[in-house]
Length: 270
Image (cartoon, rainbow, N blue to C red; front, side, top):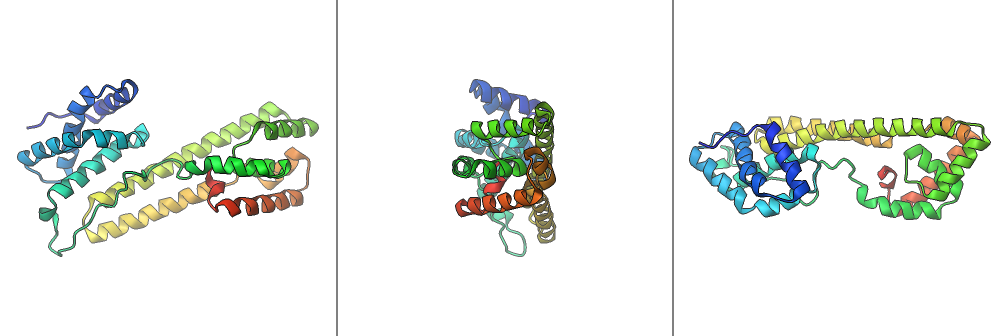
């Protein structure tokens, strides 16, 4: 019988191995923990458990490299899904249900499904495009969507705030608070998406899979709406910059049009 390893013990091992790049301890304990998680969901024999530990050890190097793409808050989910897929691959014939339908694993290890920001790779492209826009247009976009702001745009914002007799420290403190709230919200929504993604991969019952799929879509929609939420309203931007709300709307319209020429998802890249 394999030894028991608690969840609260395995995560520090993973964290330490990432820092030191010494994999001896985590390689010894992680496969056992993974197979134990598998055994809690599947009625597998001790021989199958031992086989799965060996299987994980055989692919450990590749698995570990893939796991580095995941944040620590999500990496245990990756390892659980990985061992389930390895089990299905190894014992696929015995996993075919009475209906004869075989559920293929859909997890794309190369593109993690639970990344906090799915548009991060477009950030460089977004910065380049913002730099080509007029300063005021880029500033209005940055304020409404919390987009990256180059130094001269930030200096322009400081000048406008002082010109309108607004407290700059208070303004940026409020901005940071809103940013933190946004990150926490996105994190919570992403956790729920990951939860139902894992359930989809672990479940073979058609009705349950349908329900899990609907729940995942609901949480994905909520995250999309959260990403679309404005950081500063048109009224707040107009007050900060000393311009009319109509001018703000016109600048936003022009800026969005230019960004969509590059890619419709760029406004999510903050």
